[in-house]
Amino acid sequence: HAFSAAVVHDFFNVLSILIFFPLEIHFHIIEKISYFFAQIFEGAGGLKITSPLKIILEPVSNSIESLLAYSPVALLVVSLVFLFIALTVLVAMTRSLMSEKAELFLDKYLFGTAGKSFLLGLALTAVIQSSSVSTSLVVPLVGAGLLTLRKIYPYLLGANIGTVITA
Image 1 (cartoon, rainbow, N blue to C red):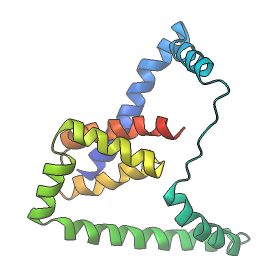
Image 2: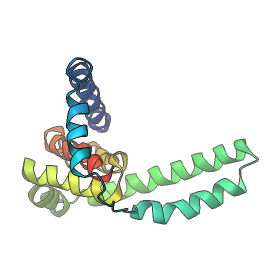
Image 3: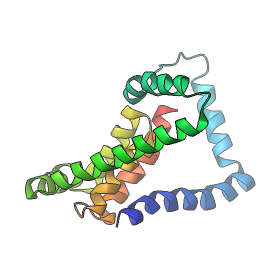
Image 4: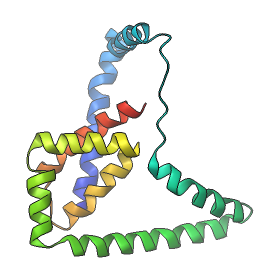
């Protein structure tokens, strides 16, 4: 089930390309919309939002990378160790969530309706500025049987649209 959840996101992206790319090539729809909004917002200042995930992880990853910059094999080994630890912790946390109360909370409050699910994906992606991270959060929940593909699909759509907010 977890693999299916991960693939749903990929299929959505591929299908989007199959639909929008030919339309853009022939009619320049996205180009025209972009030009329209560029004219509206021309000269307007921007707002820089820093991802909290980046603030937390960048110093750690930069330190590790600088320590191991001249030893790619050591960097690979350390990366694999961190990956193994992260997966172990993720599985343990997912198993601890498998209570009826957690399942009810997920079903009722976060993914109860398509609208709630969509807004959760959109807001979470806008805050952490990474659709990959927000997508990766639901994959183990599907794998653990807490969520279904039907429940996470609107969430994944929201996550994809949330990436536009961070652009």
